[in-house]
Amino acid sequence: MKIKPMKIKPKFGSFSSITTRLVFTYFLIMLITLFLFSYYILTTIRVYLYDDEKLNVATMSNVVASFAVDYMDPETGLLDEDGFERFVNEVGVDSQMRVMVLGLDATVMYDSQNNRNLIGTAQVRPSVLTAINGTDGYMQYTNDDGMITLDASAPIKNSDGNIVGVVNVVYVPETTGRFVNTIFTETIFLIVVICVFVGIIIFVIANLVSKRIVDFTSKITSMSDDGILDEKLDISGNDEISRLGEAFNIMSEKVVTLEQHRVQFVSDASHELKTPLSSIKLMADSILQNPDIGMDYVREFLEDMNTEVDRLNRIVNKLLYITRMDAHANDDDKRMELLCLNDVMAGIERNLKPIADKKDISLIFSTPGTIFLTANKDVLWQGIYNIVDNAIKYSDPEGYVLVAMDKVDGEVVIEVRDSGVGIASEDISKIFDRFYRVDKARSRETGGTGLGLSIAIAAIQFHGGRIDVTSELGQGSNFKIIIPDTTLAPNEEVEQ
Ligand code: ADP
Image (cartoon, rainbow, N blue to C red):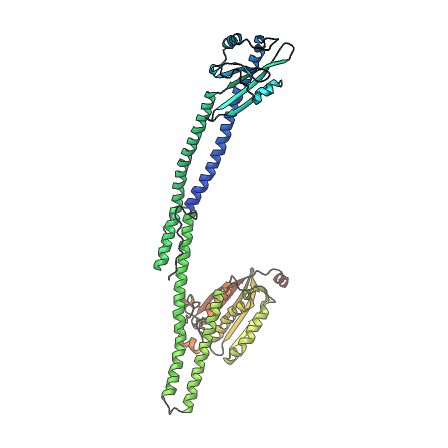
């Protein structure tokens, strides 16, 4: 059997591939997590370190401001630069801190750095303005080189509490800046290394998983390409993929069996149809090739041809019924309903009584009471009818056919007993096969098609039931139809 394979071969790189999706998803989750985590840690460290530095700078501006007033002329407000310089050296201000003393107009009167090049210039900076207004000022800004500058100002107050100037301290904590920058660069480096490392591991793991699926896919594709369906997938391990392989192997076994049945069925059906057709053709040829054939012969041939056409009709009808059963098991016309089995049996009796009477066979139906069951009427009818019909067909004249029904241990049991030819034990297992007949000549004589029991078993199995057969050659047969009783209330009522 050739089944066109689906051309779906996702490769690594295309987003439909499991490997790509796994690697990409894990990578993204890891990257986002690492970045958020690092950002939080780095920000915390940075804030902690700079808070410390800010305190130093602010304290320094306050300390210097409290002493600076001693070096200012109370009349003019001018600063004794040399004296103040000595004070700054004595206090031991960090050489990286730039200390400036400014007048109330923000003009620099003292500058501890860069050859005092800002002296005489106005430094209208926010922190300075805040201090001129009487409160400590602080600012922090980032230079072009990424370093952070801390800028703190404190008002200089005379003994009356009046503001006479401002001390401004500017500090670039290079060690802290370099430390923070180093941690930042190293963290980025670490994130990249972790990403690459984990990415490789995820890739390897995902590849191992998808490789087995790819192996399965290529094996399945080559199986369907070459039409070899009975090959098996190699299953090792006990994981989900192994179970997928197992399920596939079971399915392919079923497909092979179904295919064998299909081929057998088509071949048997063609053969069965060919036999009556050949007879008809033969008889028609005989009439046509004998122009002098008498009317009596023609009539005899036509009667035989009519019988064969009836046979063909029966075979075709049963074949159609079988295919409908196979293909439409869940159709609406197979819906289950609550049935009174007695009514179904009465209908079958009415249909078959004339046939039994013609053969002088006693057809006796017996029931202990009213039995209800949930079933599909037409399908159930086919199941019981074919078995009772056979019992009459395979019984000799003046025999009997007993049909009894009962409800035993939650099961509905319909027993069909006949006084017919019986079935050899080796044939019992085959009589339900399509087109199987123990005695072809007899079946043909009685108008059999070899399909009655296969329809019956399919119909009973449709109701979740089974058929038990006991028989002895020459002694008659007993067909027991057993259907689980899914009906509750009505039957309970009957039993009470
Ligand atoms: P058929 O149309 O030939 O009766 P079935 O599928 O109904 O086909 O039955 C298959 C074969 O089983 C019959 O040909 C017959 O040989 C055998 N068989 C079925 N029912 C009986 C029976 N009650 N007694 C004896 N043989 C039976």
